[in-house]
Amino acid sequence: MPDDLLRQAARRLETMALIGAVLWLLATLLGHLAFHITNPGDPRWAQLQTSDGVAAASTAVSLALFFYLRTDSRDPARVVDLGLVYMVIMAFAIGVVIWLIGRNVAALAHKPADPNSRLCCLEGHPAPRQHRFAVAPLLGSMVTDRADWRLDVPVRPA
Image 1 (tube, rainbow, N blue to C red):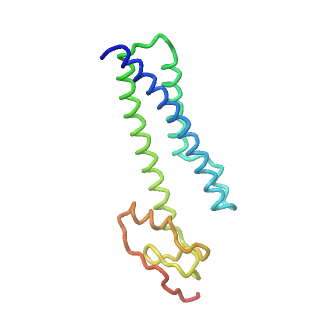
Image 2 (cartoon, rainbow, N blue to C red):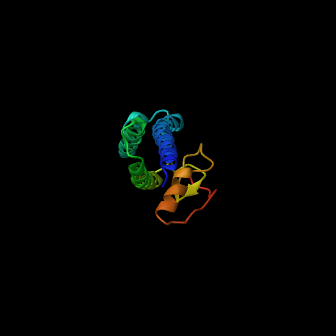
Image 3 (cartoon, helix red, strand yellow):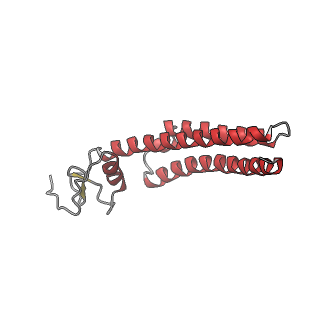
């Protein structure tokens, strides 16, 4: 490839690496914030999870690539190879985070719930009364390949 095309590819990869680092960081912070807003009394929102470690490593890889591409001592032909390696690493990290989140959602879906609620879902376990639509059991159902939903089934008080 001509050198000018390789320089343009390096510049695009530099931009993509910086955007990737920002997105990994923002997604993690906003995920913790969303958990805190939806569960204000739960202290787990401030705890680090395995997915946070994956996000931190991915942010570090993205920033390392960004700062490497900012130097003048790089070989333009090698930049294309680095871009391919970077995309494989990011795809693997995204897959690991999706798998970890799926495991957590499935665990939440099987958590015992309030027996006086009106919304029954996933194997007849009721969801909390204040939520008309429970997302965690839905996602847990998708992860565990279960589809035994029953909405608005009246529950007899205990």
